[in-house]
Image (tube, rainbow, N blue to C red):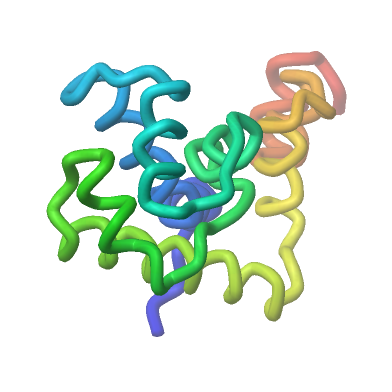
Amino acid sequence: MEKLNPFERINQEFAFGALLLKTRNTINKKSRKKIIEELMSLDFKVGENTITSWENGNFFPPEDKLSEIAKVYGIEFRELTEQYNLSKKAREDRKVKPKNSKEKTVEKLFSGGISEPEIIEKLNPDTHKRQYGHQ
């Protein structure tokens, strides 16, 4: 298996949610409320927080419900399934493998828990020394 850089891994991990959000916002232009109404009509028990969690990539819906979700969002089932599997695998790989320092730094960057000089120092110590005058 090829090793992904931290940005590629993060992109893969959130590919499923990004597809849902992009489709809802740009293609079908449905509100979350409309998505919820349509899913509830199919006997889903979901609320706005659930939809938000799917679209943010924090949680995944049950795999056996992907067909209905694809219909409601207007996404091809095959495309949705591919992104679902890609995201699930990336999430599982991240949980199993210990993070290296660059991956931890990228995660801190996305969470807002690190400053720009710290990022430069961690990712490229030589640049940090030149830019901030450390010897």
